[in-house]
Length: 312
Image (cartoon, rainbow, N blue to C red):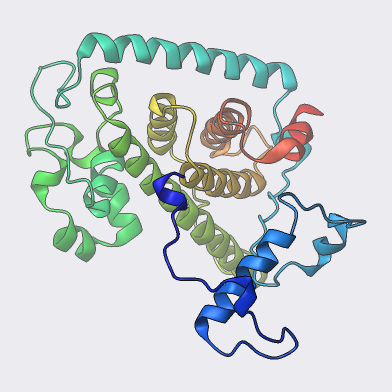
């Protein structure tokens, strides 16, 4: 008998077993009853006539369900051929980034033109990454000037002599390919949260503008749905994101997808003479590109989300 099957506790023999109709009189008798009951049961048991579907409606009421994706007008949805072409080009881009990453051999991110090191913010400093990626001006409009002065030091966005101090750093190839996956996922999580906050703020601004129009007040300038700088960073980080993705990354991509769908549903400019028509058209194209990448390449959003877009 192997060591793992040796008796660990003393057990009575069956001859010393008392009346089974009475509770066990000692711990030893209880262990003997447990052994005899286990020996009498078959090694494999199968439930009879059990329909597992009867438990579907008995799930806990606290179980969270995925929210629906906001629908957009038909003129905002891309054609199926365009989506397939974007997905194929994105896959080719990912393969190219893999080859570039192998050639670069890792290391710190460097400026692609001067060869100087970028002063990259710390991993957990979300405010500094906001200014680094999107610029101090956009960060000031989002977080406020005082928050930028307190939370985002000048050194977090480069030196004063570097041109990206106000406008942010472009996600150039030599920098993105040197990001490890922890940094890539973290910065992508930051962008997903910023897009979610932007979608909520934009809904509030549009609601206030509607009230201002009803009260004959002068409406404010309609904000852009998504800046091309933010779209470029998200696109670059998605291109560098390894597959297969973890459940946490999948949840983050679904959050990002849901916010992008909400922004796309807010697109209302259709008149070519509108001063903001070109900017919103470019923003809508960037949103559709990111939605296509998340749904077709990373398989997020479910079949309903993919099929709904492919119908156009």
